[in-house]
Image (cartoon, rainbow, N blue to C red):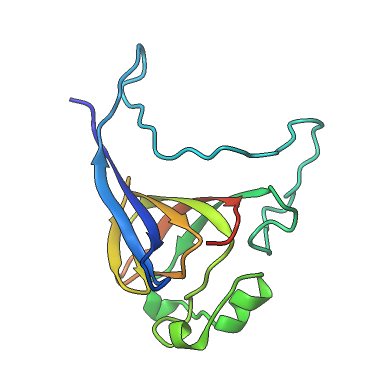
Length: 173
């Protein structure tokens, strides 16, 4: 039997607070020669260019989020140390182009939002996705679609967690 993929989708409640609007197992849709194929999310535009061979990130460092150019995207893999070993500051989030508010960073210093649609795939370990009103534990193989909501990532375990992120420029919520 082909495996399923857990998909978590965020949104906003009537008061504009971030919530989880879907947390579900999506069944595999096998195709010839492909035992696992799952459609996770679809957007209607992405004005990227495939021209040229320039490496936009030769050193592997992307400081700003979201992309500085409208319509851009960022793909990164992040290793989160356990929270007890990680030191975050709201000032660092602001320096990297993210929105923060004191009431939210009081809950967790990494609370932020960007005007992006983010595809987050937990590759190793486990990580807590914190929202204004809810939180959920993600384990290897789980996917979250982060839709411009305030959020933070908390590693409450004693081992690192590895998450792949794809951020795509979006209109604000």
